[in-house]
Amino acid sequence: MIRLLFLIPLGLCLLWTLYLQLNGYKLQDGKKGYIYILIVSAVIALFYTLMWWLTNR
Figure: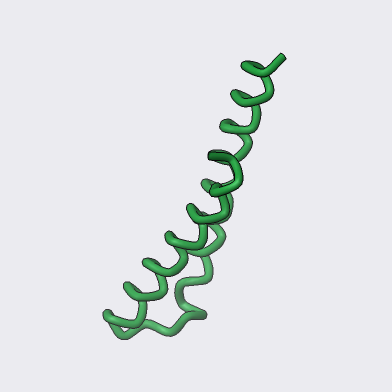
């Protein structure tokens, strides 16, 4: 499960890029969205890593 955590930000960034292109925005206009996606994904990854670490002790 943990080895697939990179798919969360990858998929969300892909969806965000598609949204921006379909609505006529430039990728530069969505820069803040990419930052939010990376922050949320990092929090999710840290949570899963912590849970994995706590349950395998």
